[in-house]
Image (spheres, rainbow, N blue to C red):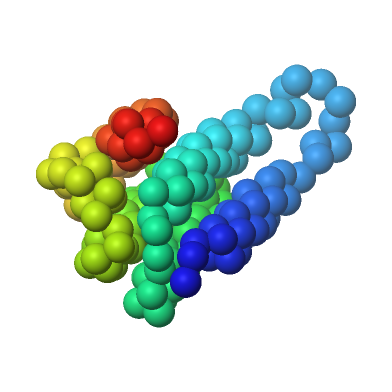
Length: 192
């Protein structure tokens, strides 16, 4: 089967997740800038999570663009990814309220790690299908993905040492992925 429905469904889920996150913002009762100060941790957590969801949405689009066929296993792997992404609004809210506490910051990292692992599973399922040779060629060693996994694995226990280290690692991974996966883009443009 082709990727159209899978991509449309995933786009809708990610759009809903972003909407859920923004609904966490409550309007301040005061009308001055000082009233926004307590919202700063929530805004920064929202911004980081918005970037992560945007990265997954963007890379998912590129992944589906180069994918020629999907199987039932790919559909389930995609749902697995969406499961982990659906937890992002919860851990975002928790971390924003308790950004100096180890357990919420580590939980955020566990969800990011789950999403990254499920992304790898999704890519693996797509690559296994013989019609998707272009993706296999584009991915190569996938060092950026492996580096992201290593950063998440380190960030979770480091949250119990000093939470800013973990948060810094999350920001670092987001910065690494801000530009869409150029390997896939290069493969797409090579063929056109």
